[in-house]
Length: 103
Image 1 (cartoon, rainbow, N blue to C red):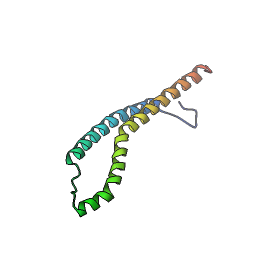
Image 2 (cartoon, helix red, strand yellow):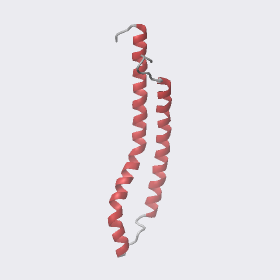
Image 3 (cartoon, one colour):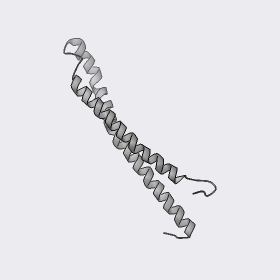
Image 4 (cartoon, rainbow, N blue to C red):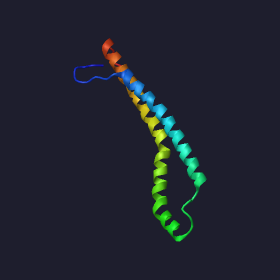
């Protein structure tokens, strides 16, 4: 759609939205691999005073980061879905305007 001041390449937006699904799958694979490796390693910093001191400063930040990485695949898929939805809406509105419909 091009109204002189604004244009959208709907097919390109749909293509990019579809690419986010692939990125979501990749992010999920990375998260699964990371999660498995961390579970296998366990609390590898030890139980001595130095290890416990490290754990005190590390675990909260690590858990917060882990939660962000865990959420990323879903967020990427959500953004892709929303982009596709808006591209379809944009195309429908453009077609309605072009044919003189007001719905």
